[in-house]
Image (cartoon, rainbow, N blue to C red; front, side, top):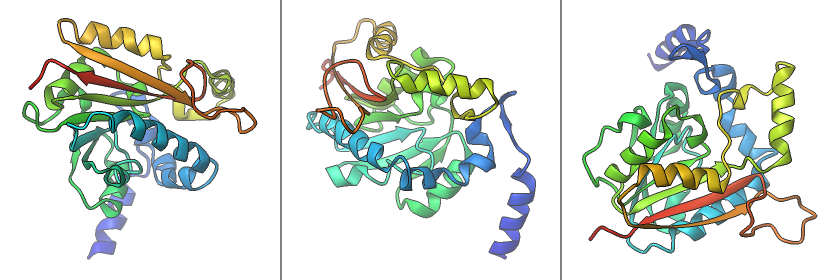
Length: 241
């Protein structure tokens, strides 16, 4: 019976390419079905440093014991949070990504839109967005939803605008290749901070960030300069009990 249901699902979804009228790679099974392989191959080293950066930032807030990761995809990072002592749940808009995640992650997952999170106020201690915030159409609204649902703050893991890889990706797109970033908005730390300031007017908070994703030959692999393929940023809310 399970094999028959899977065959029906594959038949219905194999030609899906769009979400809300525009092409999105995370609604294309040609890409979502192989997503985990990227981290097991060429991005393995990058993943190690990304987790190190994110872990250092969020662990400084000892109030955070539970977390909701939105845009969790196949739960690549969602499965990792427990290694640093945080109980995680996941949310994503793509049924194809979550369809894999349910077989890889033993925690709670929800199919939902980050602009309208189906949770009560302060359900979690914190929210996390790992290489997903770049795709949101209304980032201010998403941040406001995040601090409604997450009591103590947000941690971001972002693809950095200040990277030579951004130019390479855009050139590839002109030739019809590398469809993963066509609808992405690349941020720098300062650009993200400007969005946060707009979203959190009147709130008391502190921000800390650090960058990684530097070449192997570079003398350091993590620094507090806005350059590198990836940066982590933590918003700590200070006006809550």
